[in-house]
Amino acid sequence: MFYLKRSDPEAVGFLKESIARFRSMFHTVFAADNVILFNRTLGFRNDARFMDAFNRNARNRQEASLLLRLNTIAWAGAQVSHIPGDFVECGVWRGFCSAVLMDYLNFDRLDRKFYLYDTFEGIPSEYDSEKHDSPLFREAGLYDSVLQRFARFPNATIVRGVVPESFSEALPDRIAFLHLDMNSSKSEIAALEVLFDRISSGGVVVFDDYGWTGYRAQQVAEDRFVQARGHRILELPTGQGLLVKQPSP
Ligand SMILES: C[S@@+](CC[C@H](N)C(=O)[O-])C[C@H]1O[C@@H](n2cnc3c(N)ncnc32)[C@H](O)[C@@H]1O
Image (cartoon, rainbow, N blue to C red; front, side):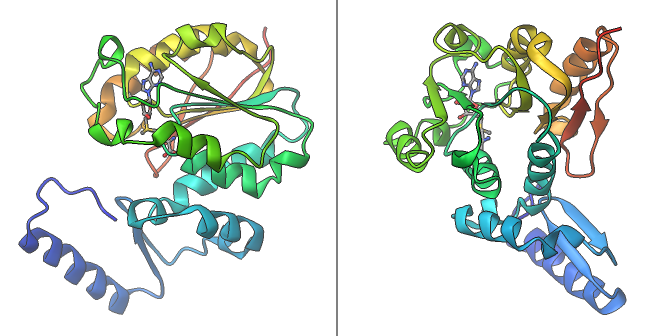
């Protein structure tokens, strides 16, 4: 799936034709989620455990298009296997990203917790700094379906409420993995204000929207936040941002 400025049949047809032509010009073409790659190995697709976790959890075309983003998340989750701390996602919605990661890592067998924070009722108006709320974020039965989705993980804690206020209900002391995906710079900075100091040295943060033009405000605010703490975020071609927590000086 691609996110187009114009999604009329002419624009969609042109994109499809172009991709078909690229296939005749290059040995391999990967095209999804506004990324087109030519002649890349994409070797992570040989990881059967990852591909199974991804395919088992992708429930629609949009989720199925997020393979590269989920590879980043799976890498980050596996990367912190020797780093102390729990896992956190702020912005859960239907739970797709965390479900893939938890399946991939067999998280129920790990001696760690996974904290999942969301209102399950959309971006609160007082935090919707860039007006990215969507009726999809408050679809009927959302919270119950997420409870069901993660029921097989006894070490998952689902915290319903507004971030960061909901942190008062449950909050890990130390964090090894953080996925920020709230589509709002105000929500994400408010989360970072509380969470950043709890991230272990070597812990990883994945910022879902960091490099997308529609979310530029997040990049500006997050760069300012981490630079003030001596860190830098790597902008990935997927549009995600990646940060590895450095030891305190
Ligand atoms: C893009 S969705 C998350 C997608 C999800 N990571 C996935 O795997 O599909 C953004 C979510 O952030 C939540 N959200 C945004 N601001 C929030 C806040 N301040 N507190 C709690 N949830 C928030 C919204 O309710 C929405 O469900």
